[in-house]
Image: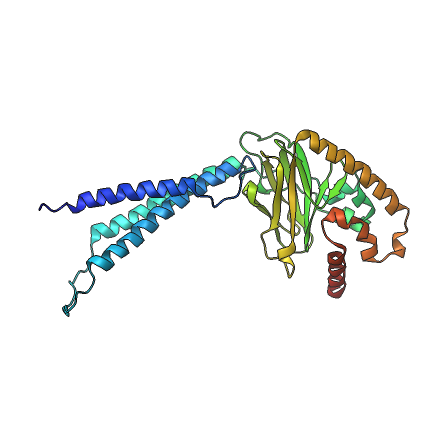
Length: 332
């Protein structure tokens, strides 16, 4: 019986491994639903890496299993193994292949980063102080003069900015995002709205100006495939376009303290009509809330009492607010 050449077995194994790895790499369900214009770019890169990883796994583990069976110790065989000392062509081969893979992935990742706007983080500054001076802004009644004058006004130079298609074009919507232990606060300079949730219209080019008051936080929306750190004293930017209406989780991806795990909120992507309705309703509600705050003398209230009316907008409970205030007082 004629023996099948090793080269033919290798060719067959290569075809099978390639087919399996490509199918798994392109048909897995590991990622959440795509909801931004940037998500397909990230998923495409992830799928390529996952395909390569599957292929390497099958080759390495398959070789181990074959060798375990083919070169196992037979009963009664106490002889030494063959004195094999190395193979220069093989060593060159298994060094060259990973080198080519790493270089290719590096070039691909730079292209994806560029298409997402990673090389153009230069937005228009809208700080908390700017929001404080907007008509009807509820935050105007809660910022001290010192906070208003010392808030950062430098344009973000770090983060995900304009894509090549939107370069030199202003964003459709700018939102100032502040991370604090342990909540996200969203300020809308164009309307004076302050919210504990991020509300945006679908299809709009949105620019988030991120900052932090205490420690490093990280603004992460898994469905958008986007994550950007919020740094104390250093403004950062995150610019994106949401493509699917819905409600998606926002998670802090940087360990920021004892209650880091509870630092969660959500981004709600509206249709343009629903977003306009939400903005109108909140402008009216926050104007009424502002009038109530101004009618009370803040000097007569404790910190928790003063901030209590804003717990809903901040996206936290009254109990959480009380614990935050107590913790701050202890640190002071």
